Image (cartoon, rainbow, N blue to C red; front, top):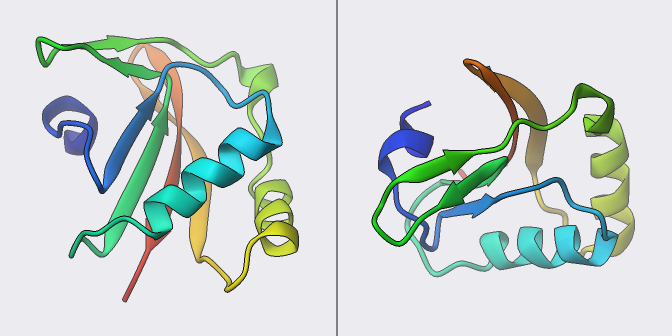
Amino acid sequence: MNIIRYENEGTHVDFKREQYHHIKSLLRDIIARANANTEASKRYIIIGVMHLSDGKREYFSIPRNEFKDNADYQSLVRQNIEPEIKFSYKPFELVPKWLESVLLEYR
């Protein structure tokens, strides 16, 4: 995924080292990405990546038993955030690590 390798953190990309352990943190980050002042139609939260000050990345594999279900995240956001925010959540492999992404899309 080129965004992980080449983009810096900013208004449309946010890197998180580890899985969310508190619902409020996840909701706060989704709201922040949704309200970001950017023309980008896609905004990302990438979980399992630490963006270092020298521009390099450190990758932290997410244990497969910690993967969340997209439907659970969808329900959580619908119940707690208005207006509706369209997003998707999915685990993916960036060999040899398993990471997760939250993608918010605006059209």
